[in-house]
Structures are given as C-alpha cells and as structure tokens.
Amino acid sequence: MTTKFERQGTILRLVQQQALSTQAEVAEALHGQGIDAVQATVSRDITQLGLVKVRNGEGRLVYALPGAADLDRIDELAAALRRWMGESVASGTTLVVKTPRGFAAALADAIDTASLQEVAGTIAGDNTVFVACRDGITPSELSAELRSLL
Image (cartoon, rainbow, N blue to C red):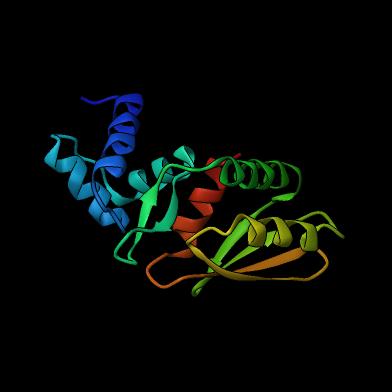
C-alpha cells in the first residue's frame, strides 16, 4: 500500500518527466509506477500539490509545478474558502456555494483569481455563488477540490 506522501511525490516526479494533460493521464502514469489511484484521489492530489497547467513547447496544456505567483493565488483562495465557504450543493453543471450575507462577491473573486482549470467562471449574489464547472468536471468533484483546500 502506497502512502499519500509517496503517491504525491511520485506525481511531482512524473509531471517533471512527462507531458501529462489530464487527471486520467496522471492516474495512468501512476499505474505505470505500480500505484493505483482513482480519479478523485488524483484530483485531490493535484489540488493539494498546487499543480498548474502551462503550455509546453508543442503548445499543449500540461501539468507543471507551481511558481510563486501560483502558490500565492492558491493560498488566497484557501483563506477565502476558510472564511466564507458554507454549504455547497451540486446542480447540473454548477456548484452552488452559500456564504455569509454580503460575502459572495469576495469568494467569487477569489475563485476567479485562482484560475482553477476546473472552473469556467462564477456568478455572485449576496450570499450565494454559482460556480460553473468546465467540461469533464462534475460539481461534486469541484466541491471536493475546494474543500480539500480548507
């Protein structure tokens, strides 16, 4: 049985050695290293490691280690989530997040500024944020990723 620490270390090594564009490709590369991990686990690992997508020399978006600016954005998002994220509910392709009254715009701004690959955009009311998921990401998966930052 591989520990989380070992699995995440392997992911870091793999993204430096290979052009991995999707969570499925990361999971497949892990499998090639003898580590079985489901997509939800890989998704959490990618978020916790702060991996970002960058264009490689061929113009393809691939996972990479974060730079200082990327880490700052993720830290700011984590702080905003801890302060303002309440209950969340999946609805279609949208994650509906409750906040204390008057804080939805601040949370939506933090989510937008973080430039998460899973988020197409946000709409904020007074105490509710609608987070549109990109194709291939379910609201439940996005909720798990956001909560992993808490």
